[in-house]
Image (spheres, helix red, strand yellow):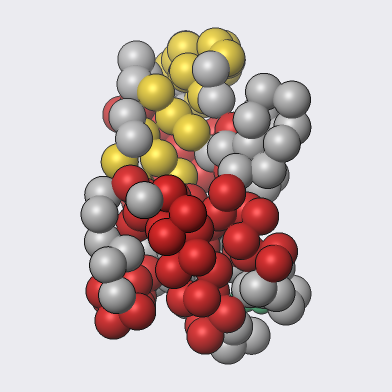
Length: 158
Ligand code: FES
Ligand code: FES
């Protein structure tokens, strides 16, 4: 018999209750159990960054994080970065401004990394941005526009 765990997860300021097997990742909990499909599944093995979320403000790869590990912590997904009235986060606005996406599949993960990049003070130069963002792959090759968007959002935040 498969054991299930009852979890209470704090996601984007809301409490969610769910029953999952112990091996369920945060990524699958978000997408399959809570219909929070903004967080994308690319490789499912820590290689692409598409699944990037924040836990207690720190960037994590949700495909490598068990849902059970993050109970009691503050989880933020792409659905939670806009303001209370739906106004875009400055990083989201900068991505739009710079056309920093093509198909958009990598974009939620890029934005979650970019928010952390700026907040943690790693956006001082294009090289620094590229280094911090290097775990977020973009198969469309929108890298130059992504760096430009992060640079602009970082400058606006100073
Ligand atoms: Fe998590 Fe690729 S889906 S790193
Ligand atoms: Fe298509 Fe990045 S915009 S993978």
